Image 1 (cartoon, rainbow, N blue to C red):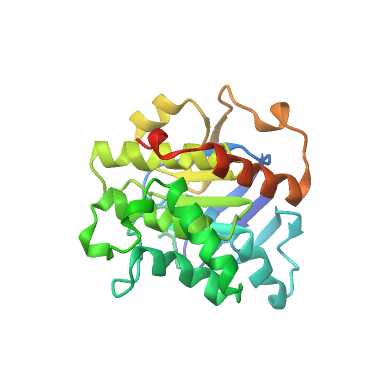
Image 2: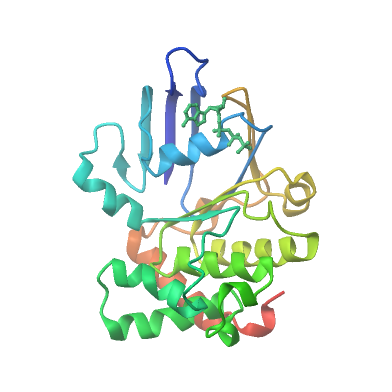
Length: 255
Ligand SMILES: Nc1ncnc2c1ncn2[C@@H]1O[C@H](COP(=O)(O)OP(=O)(O)OP(=O)(O)O)[C@@H](O)[C@H]1O
């Protein structure tokens, strides 16, 4: 689903490379932690995945596309397949929870009926169906992050990138957010989460990619390998699994 082959990235020729000779392969449905000190290159990896920046060297494949030679006009289609969540939530303060989530689909030009169905499903997935009419400032940090997650997954992306999603949250809210990410991963969404929270990484026992000074220094695979559990069904498989999960996950499972 995400493959890096000997990827290097230099932002500025007068500075050391941000990434050097990075290679890994993330299969469909995996949950991968990206760890490493500040400045080690975690965000740069994510920026390469969304084609916000292009590699200086090496090849990147994301959701069946080779990014290095990808024409600019194909970038929106790549980004439809990727949801992104940031540390600072980035919600629109003058819109309600449901309007924040609907906005993504409006921009994508989805029909009103489809939006009316998708938004409550997405809010239910993150356990916030009953807060649809609230404004962001009326929610806790953890709830705001869960709205941001609902917004990221409402378009049913194959991949969800979370860059320090618990960085601004206390332990209880962090647990809620990680519980939601874990649930989303179980709908076959490939999940990559950058974090500084070692206790969380230890607890979840998933694959860890560790960066140091722009190099990949550790790739440990946890107990769960999605490709061993499920055949690769392509996009259709992802969507149907997502819908099946929407039907089966109820609010009482919400942490
Ligand atoms: N837009 C940019 N222009 C120039 N250098 C950059 C740019 N973005 C990042 N860098 C440099 O690239 C290196 C990797 O930064 P990156 O943001 O990927 O690290 P990080 O591991 O995500 O750090 P943090 O945990 O603090 O978010 C750093 O040396 C940083 O200064």
